[in-house]
Length: 455
Image 1: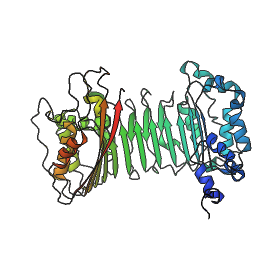
Image 2: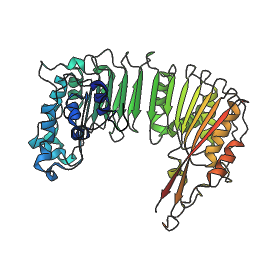
Image 3: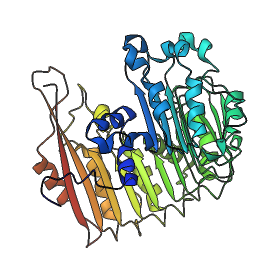
Image 4: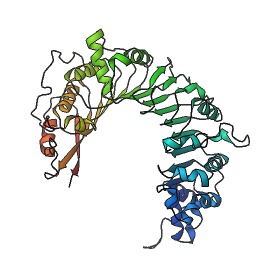
């Protein structure tokens, strides 16, 4: 092939369709101007991704008919993914003018495998749109049997409607429920599919949601929400669990937390954030309980920050009593907003780990099988370094420590009290490489990113 010739256009249609599937539908259509070869390629892509970023009443007439024309001209017999994403202000204008229900039925008629609907509703008007998004009694001729992944974002839907909806998908494998208003109860067993493997529930603002993880086919679940009351059956099929909460309420959540944690003792991958270290510290204080039951755990993921020395001690003790643990992944991305402030110098490496040191000492024990530790969004706080130091002193067969230092530089004229720029990466790197290690074969991989703020 001569120099300057179009290499991409000569690729087979299947490969070009796959390339176009990574674009939004609008971007995919725009490729038709490249050459005659590309005029009809977008019509056969296995993905339709429609995003309405502007309020509907501000669009031009041609833009208002874009969705209709795109779906009318699309000719693929089967879809891998169909995604609708409406802006906050767009949906109320769409309801009167565009049949959103028709679009969903279009996707189902094309045997879509992944259906994603994001429709942020105005709360004062949601009564008018309540049953609009999903018909709990859809036409019987729609081939729902193909749908494997369903994602619901910012939808107004109650318990009964959701239960009726899920009964239509016999082969559903993955379900995401994100900010579904009016939802008070959810049971994983509502999914009639015996193939449901993955469940994600994000309800940070849903007050008092009762969530029951009771489907015997589940292999993983993720829950994000402070007020979600979790109930987990003792299911041996669950291998991965993630539970994120923005805070820990010891006098409200202790009993429920102990119960569902015991039913997860067999998981192989467990992800949590700061609430878990606070819970462990509280258990030490009240019950002298080290939670030495996660014997099968292989991967542990934790999101910071560490607030107290007792949290560190409790977390380290938990880890050394996980005999199968092989990988630890830590993300300190929230440390800056917790640490930085008018009364706490944010990046003073010489600062003691805690101002009022406790009586507890790190537990005796070793991380006998941990071979890899990954640190994300490391800011250089002493609390972060203490955590890393204790891990390295206990990981006797550690092979790799991969650390990404996130250096922030603030504009000195921004006048934000307490917010100082990070120290040079050379200083932080020297601090990390000087830490003693229990393993003689550890390789330290130091990366850094640089961000200017307030300029």
